[in-house]
Amino acid sequence: MSQLLIKGGHVLDPAAGVDGILDVLVAGERVVAVGENLDGGDRVLEARGKLVLPGFIDMHVHLREPGFEYKEDVASGGRAAVRGGFTAICCMPNTQPVMDNRTVVEFVRGQAARAGWARVYPVGAISKGLKGEELAEIADMRSAGIVGLSDDGKPVASTELMRLALQYAAPFDLPVISHAEDPTLSQDGVMHRGRVSSLLGLKGVPAEAESVMVARDLLLAGLTGGSLHIAHVSTAQSVELIAFYRSRGVRVTCEVTPHHLLLSDQAVRDTWYDTCTKVNPPLRSPDHVDALRRALREGLIDAIVTDHAPHHQDEKLVEYDYAQFGMVGLETAVSLVAGELVGKGVLDWPQVVALMSTHPARILGVEGGRLEAGGLADFTVIDPGQKVTVDPKDFVSKSRNTPFAGWQLTGAPWGTVVGGQVMMWEGTLTAR
Image 1 (tube, helix red, strand yellow):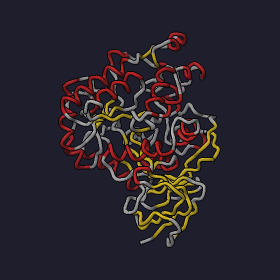
Image 2 (image 1 turned 30 degrees about the horizontal axis):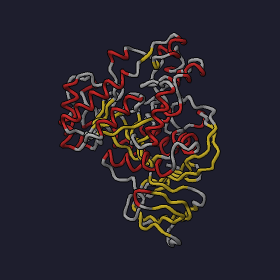
Image 3 (image 1 turned 180 degrees about the vertical axis):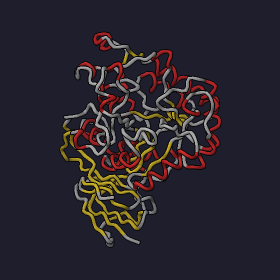
Image 4 (image 1 turned 30 degrees about the vertical axis):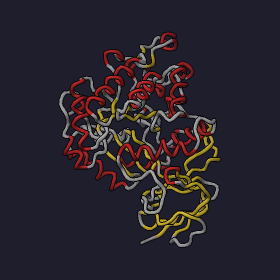
């Protein structure tokens, strides 16, 4: 069994009580020891001046395969994840055919195994065909390896179907991931409803389109005892509701994206209708951004995710009203968090480890999220002082739709180790 020794990095895992300049010895897929002056290793890697962290897990990614491989596929998405410092990703089910049955789940898992980059955890559809009419084959998909349920990209409009999903998922210990949107309130809006949308003449989506559905799903989670996870929260009301119901024992967690933390609806105006700013839920007004950052700092939000949503340029180089929703995020998220959140005092690195590794592993019920002897040898290694400029031409993702092009940041993923295999080191991907 081959051994790997990572020497002299700042090893940090608050959950395991590890914080210091240490070595990490790996045998096969497991950590053998974490300590000072360790010997051994068929391969020795120097990590002096770097942060060695438990592998980052992105709970919310769209890989597009099967059906939309021209935007992204399992292999290119897994490679982009590794390049971005993620050791594992969860892929959403809005594919074609929809991931609502065992066959599609097994196909995606097989594609991930053949690609051999990041770990890929499928999320099964709540409803057949994402139509919101009938529950998908939850038990069968669970036995095939799904880690959660979601109709992400489409809200579950039927309250009764959402109740059934929460009730039925509970015995399988599956979180139900809610895309919280009331379509009768959003009504085909393309950005946040407010002063900026009025100035630009674009149809707006009120904040209540999200928070009304968050309230409904929280009530249903309390009724059923199911595990509810609110995807990509974007409003002050949503985090207030989540905190209120959590304090009363409802099983609820939530996530936020870097773009909802760093951009407001003003970005649409400042970029002259750049369609890379068109996302769902939309970029909100500054008061909502401030509320999200405050909630993140106070521990009311459980995870930071990318909601990586790749699109071909032909789907974005159109009028704002007709552009597809979404932006890519796998290759920018870590640097945005490092430069704009840690670098500006919103978060510290122990909080980042919790938000991007420990908590996602716990919510999904997957191994990882810890860096300790006996644990899985998945590591994210970060150079906190590296200066980077976001350049979409350098992405390994098939798509380039990001509003962060040209941003200058400090801090970048430097190494990615998955199951003891070095996928990236010194910022360079290994050959696969």
